[in-house]
Length: 305
Image (tube, rainbow, N blue to C red; front, side, top):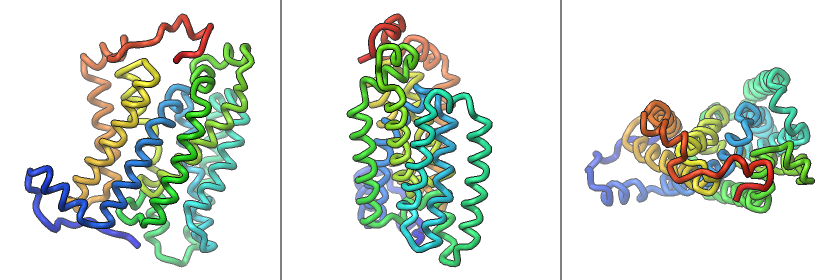
């Protein structure tokens, strides 16, 4: 059931008072819980999406989850379950393609268009509440239930665990796949594992940001972080922190405004990226890394730490 935010009390400029008012509502507490978890996993997974230059493939994967979610809603199954099945299947195929998926934008785009058309067909056949189909596209973070939060936490935990297990070899393969393969790093297996982790992250985020806007939360914070630091650990922490900040501030603004939280979350991320992109100081940071950088000469010899 959709929950629309309304101004129940004016903004007081007292952070403690405002936070207490916002968190006094169960639906806002659930929104913050789910949003925080999704933001953390988006920052971690998104860093590798940016590093591996597979942003379009990630965007396509998130959109391809729409027919799975819409089809599940059509047959009376939880949309997140349908999206999980669909994205995990597509993610495995993309992972098996490995490096080749980066050069097949045309094929991916064609399959993406068909997937969206299939999702639209399933949505048109769905006779239930139309707001559920709409929420699949643009998110309904203030409508998440305790069960939704549990599913989101479980999917995100699995995705984070998978990235943690693969971290060093995945980082090495992302920096220089050819050298990593020559050093007998299981590049193909890592590619499949990462795309499966991405599929889990996408499925977890659909309730927060929606299928069409997931890309913004996955890529934008990581793209900002990459311009501020070249250290992998610092970049991941920065991306996750920014994603959490965007979600928290976006939800707080939406509480006092009659507009969708997704707009404020994505809008904050976009404005921050533009500022970092055009600011002279940020451009200088992006060249040397605000918090340092690894020596690029080591890319051909050993995985970055």
